[in-house]
Length: 62
Image 1 (spheres, rainbow, N blue to C red):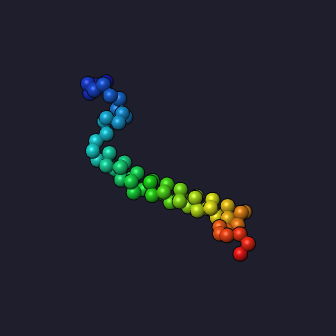
Image 2: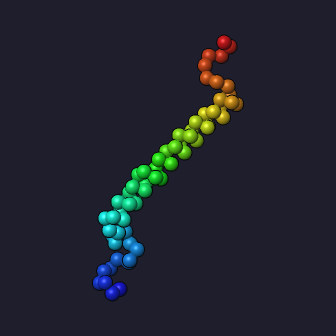
Image 3: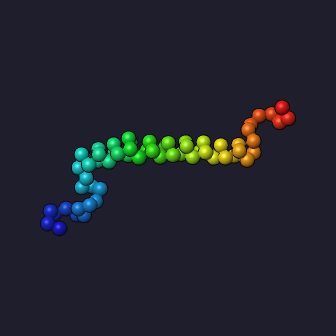
């Protein structure tokens, strides 16, 4: 290497603060909200499908 560093050019230690903040904001405001909506929506879908098969919750015979 010509820069005298022992880290490869694409190692995490070579990221500057701007790149780190950009990655944080993409994760915090882009990817994680999409994952959260997907998880909640998936759970709701599973409950809905279960209730279609097993019937709605509540006391039986009323």
